[in-house]
Amino acid sequence: MRAVLCGGTGFIGTRLAESLSARGDEVWIITRSKPAAPAAGLLYATWDSWLADPSLTGPVDAIVNLSGATIGRRWTSESKALILSSRIKAAQRIEDAVSRMTSPPSVLVNASAISLYGHSESSGGRYPMPFDESSPPRPEDFLSETIVKWEAAVDRIPIDRIVKLRIGLALGNGGGSYPLLSLPTRLFAGGRLGSGRQGMPWIHIDDIVGLIALSLDNEAISGPLNAVAPESVDNEAFGRTLAKVLGRPYWLHAPAWAIRAALGEMSALLLTGQFAIPRKALANGYVFRHPKLEEALRDLKERR
Image (tube, rainbow, N blue to C red; front, top):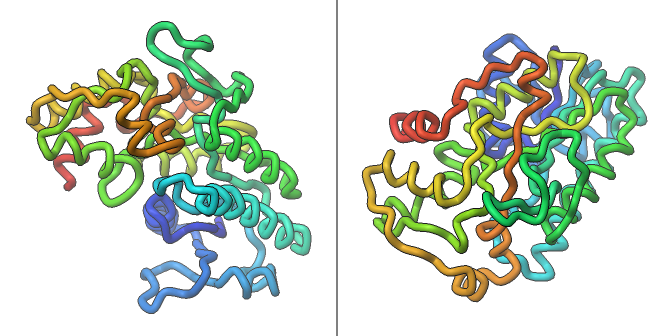
């Protein structure tokens, strides 16, 4: 398979490129500028060169789009505009490139996020839980509204099979949600955030890569695909399990008002969440490498 990765130099993209290359796929990374020291076995093109000539990679079997500015910055008006525009612009660029290809790829796997379903709690939640791929979008904050607009832009790309990978909290060393989530606990300041009942739809980086590979290979998979582990936990359970694995106390409580005062609108990332299940992945025979939270966290501890 010849695959084009947009956003292939980030946390998920780097792992995915390594995995696809290791299994014998030809991997092209589309990036703003070519690296001074390219990774062995990978091919690179800039966005400008690819858009000027979409045929420079040769016939493409698949595109994976992971492009988008980080959401892990304070949500000022400027950063919110960048978070949205970077995702819409990447989708529009891919749409432009594909529309000029003699033979378009058979599949696009595009990153999305589980937050588009709205908020749910372990008790007293506003919506039924857990969410699966049949659940409708219920945008309730800036991030979920962004995801809805992003998916709409992706749907305009002229590729017959589009998989929208709705990713939960990515757990991995060196990137994703885990380093920031685990830092307070490592510093002996672990504890409940807000009510502690908000869903924590987590997934190990190994399984994000595995689900993307499944999406590329399995022609029966299209539309939304929840990239979350089968075990749903709330913030309280996540924090206690993390403290147990790291051998740290779980004793502080960060009240919701304090988190809102410190982070503003961005506090939604910590105070709200979703309970979701990977119904489509399981129905298509995917076997999770890390289905249980405690084992997944121990794996990250051992690798660190």
